[in-house]
Image (cartoon, helix red, strand yellow):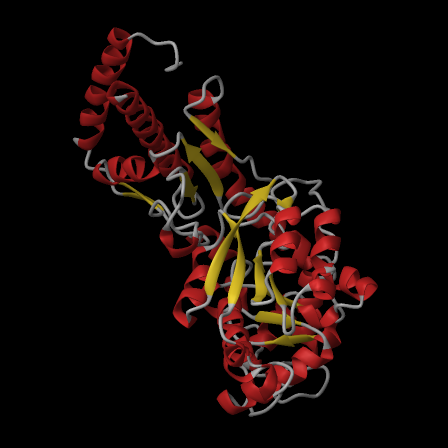
Length: 425
């Protein structure tokens, strides 16, 4: 379907045919959901052996009684599990509860209200605070900034990660920029893996940025590969060491999409200065994390290679869902300009761009036809996509058959919205 050279008569014929098809879809009473990147029940079941794995033995190999208070930094064994995710020495890692998002919120509020380098370093004492946000990006990152009143600045994503020329220029020009959000591997939602050059340049930002600058490195999909030969992500820890900027990097990961999403282990990796600064604040909030759950996870992945084998099982479940989405997109839009998308080799999302100005209309059409999509604009700060074009597709929860059905609806909605736009021009 090529709209650019189509006659008005041809457009009207397409519009009539698509409207008829759309009406028939609505009559089916579908109830399908592609909104959130959650593990499916099938994936969650891969970790059901966590239940009862301790067999009443609550003492870690290092001698920690996990039933008791204390251990703010988490058990050594759990921290070593975090080392596998973050490619950072375990003694630079804290293990916490199930949510890395909680850790990010705690670090953000700690830096904003209390300072990670002592009280005088609190961002709130310096007036306006701004954050760089690669877009499209993760809506929950943006919500944290919005709640704290931190101004967000859009930075375009490229095939190599954030536009680093833009990032470096902005930071040099404005000392009120205190940080940047990053999802470096299988970026949410585009699926981009940051290039080695991008990682090196991000690590170097601490040299030129203003006082208190921090990169929030949310490596949520560090081992969520679909390919058998995934593109490696360069170590931000090693890059920061080489640049002498360890204090500017805050790393996060979790097992929430590896084991049980509501009962995983989250990790925070940073320099000693950042760890000590955070512990001063965290020690007021809690006496220690759930170390019993940390021990469960340590036992579950105790055999060398078990984590890799476990993630291969995840890939076997997820990959057919991704393939279904990509098949429909390629068949419908591979030979025209009605939409563009990223073909990710891992993670949990596929990013799709409609023609400019159509994302909200497509989402509304799909919703009326029984297919829920993430709200248009959610992948941008303040929910405002300047081009009104980006839609995040999350195919992991539905069955393959449901994904297939939902994508048939999605394709019709994109085509119908595009034809209606062409007719109104």
